Image 1 (cartoon, rainbow, N blue to C red):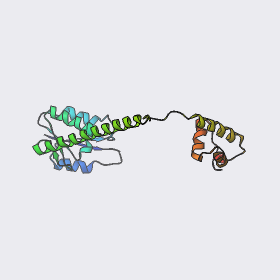
Image 2 (image 1 turned 30 degrees about the vertical axis):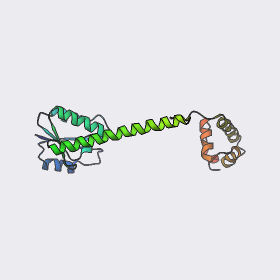
Image 3 (image 1 turned 90 degrees about the horizontal axis):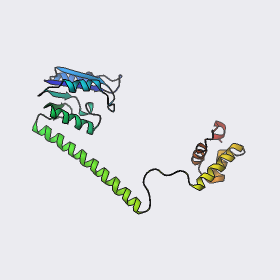
Image 4 (image 1 turned 180 degrees about the horizontal axis):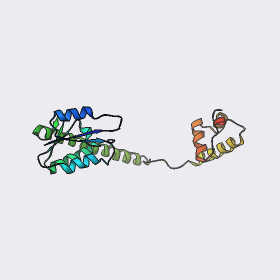
Length: 197
């Protein structure tokens, strides 16, 4: 039995195009969902997965309608395989019931895994090279002593109100953006009047 799954991300979008294509493909039952692709909780997808029987075929308009990510899609396909259920994507020309479809899907999954491994390896190598040069990865620590002193000066000048922000920035040798950062660091409320000076 061919069972369709159609999904749109928001209520403003319509399912008509997907449903027409799924019906044309011969789907006797179609599960319809309105949920963001990133959302983990998809009740209609859960219903579909629990409804499936051996030799059924899940049909989608496009693969991105089914999985939140490649990893999630591969998990779904693995679950379908365990249930002896096929997967067909109309627009992606993938049908896991055919040898070519299974081969294409497995090659795509292998390339995705290979790409993740390369990214991990490059990140690891980059961090090791940085450490060898005496640099540490991750976020920078808090302000330097010089920056802390400048932020105290900025707060003092600003609260005195004798200078505008351009003058204060010039006086302590920083940009206006850095000056605002210093003031925020010291929890100084910035007035609209002074901000435009």
